[in-house]
Image (cartoon, rainbow over all chains, first blue to last red; front, top):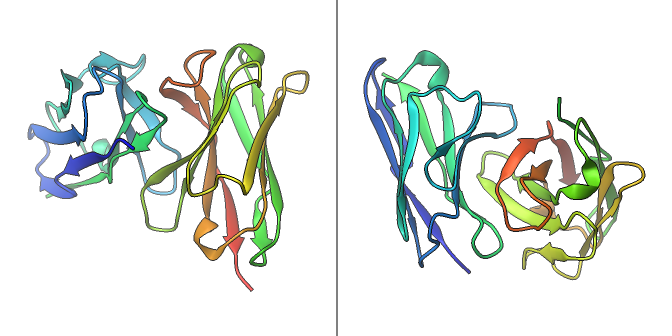
Length: 106
Length: 121
């Protein structure tokens, strides 16, 4: 089974900061990777698909990059409403989620 | 507007059974794969099962294989998760999620609000 390792598991940053979350796959998954945002008590929400495509309606401060085994989610300017847990997911071979990254405001 | 509404969760004893339903609206249901994803209290997301648009292809996580069954009724725009031989570790919020395409291997573009399953004596 393909494993996904997210880092860091949590972070605290100031409003306006650039935030980067990484996701490493245990084998080559090309670009079959998505990123989701989950706010407390809510269902996950799709942010990025196919590693770098921005889902409709998602603010442009979110971006994704990478291919193969190494991927990145970037928030270019952190906003208070971005407080959430972020998950990567591979859909190359069945499905696997990363462990999550909890983002807080400093 | 896409809408997914799960139902059927509740408290069940270890070894018991439960059937979850997910009623879909706002899209052509039969042309999209559907999945179930769960989240144990305070934990991360875990994929459980998926079914193709036509219902022919089904997939299960190893943790539920042989105990859970997924099915769909395209006439009723509903997907089901039949859960048998339930264990304490199956306690979680179960989300229904819509796939981006007919085949199973795609990302999930819409999610329901979830239904809580608690397995306890």
